[in-house]
Length: 336
Image (cartoon, rainbow, N blue to C red; front, side):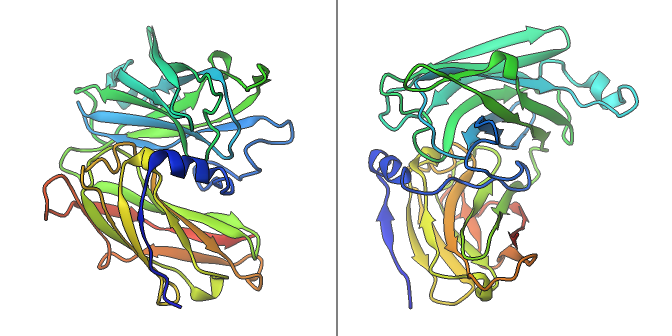
């Protein structure tokens, strides 16, 4: 049955609606998802992988795997230079010890009352950047999606191809729930890769690992902020893996957009989208989220690809009518 919908997103209403959605699952970069914590109940803090150009803007996005309301907290990200396994390599010696300059920070709350202050600690051989926040309504992380974003400028002297290791410093990170109790956290690492200014942008079809009959949380992922005016995503998957009609969402925290869905052909999902003020992807990440019910008959151990159709996928930037160059990394759907 043809499934078509045109949705105009309003931030407060959608954030409240997101409370009803299941937790986003961790993928290849983040490990498995156990509802946001582990055996001890700790909250997993994930840093999304990031990409930036020399002298350009980098966005470090912090998110969790499940809603857990927070009243206040502090999150600190350590930035480390790359090093060889045996000693320090030449790239590490020539790479700036403090490659990032913190510009501003944003913390999201359902009530829109979060107050955030940037924090910077520079050492002789590295740096830490972070944010301290509070929310009178205690609704930070009360909805799935990004928790906080740190916008930074990358040093002009870094070379394309260099990689920086990012991790959340547990000793300098603390979260407080609505009752005033400390929330233990499990930090997960990420990487910042330096892209040549002339190189194409990178996007990814984000997959999932689930049990047969569960709902897979998929999406189109970006890794750096750049304006998107409009575009189309055509995602192909094995129709035998599907157990129902996919549901598409576009979270307004990544930018305002409207979209149109066509899932008439089995195994093919087409999403046309438009952002009149080109704010889409002002925060990078899962700019298109897809919930796909899966078949209870899917065999355990089966892995099937999620392929972005290059002929049916494009992005238009700030200049109307001009399509952006990009590379694609395809994910997969695994049944375990």
